[in-house]
Length: 171
Image (cartoon, rainbow, N blue to C red; front, side, top):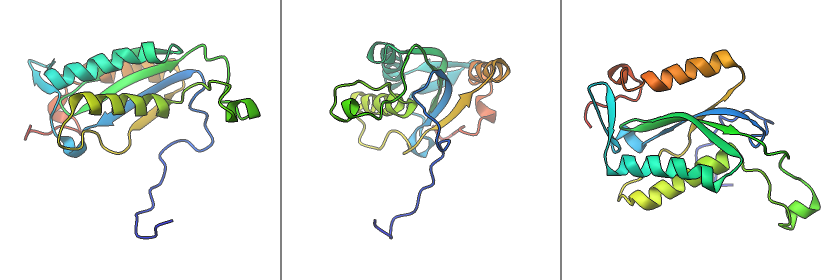
């Protein structure tokens, strides 16, 4: 262990199985809040080429991971919000000998899904700068009331852009 590196605290819920069925709200931010995916015009997000790649790769996740459904999402100039639902997985992440030998295909975790998404977007956008911040924010959606509030937040995000914590008027 390198003692010169900062000790990073995990923001994940300790002991929680992020491969289990459920709804997960995720936020992924661009490094340095750089506005790379388009701009807000008349309270609507207008995607540029990089934003379109983000959209296409998000939609592709349904093909890559057949046990997920994608709910509301929004691509903003410098961040992304989306709701992922893991459905019908039917099995937890195996910890048995078969899985260790690669004979079982464990359900993906939210981290696996977001890691794949980030990797693909980085590869396809191919910038000379770092695209995403190291981590991402997630929230386990536990009831319909919370789900409704998050959906409303996502849908109103372009309208509230100038009040948003991620707002960067330097573009």
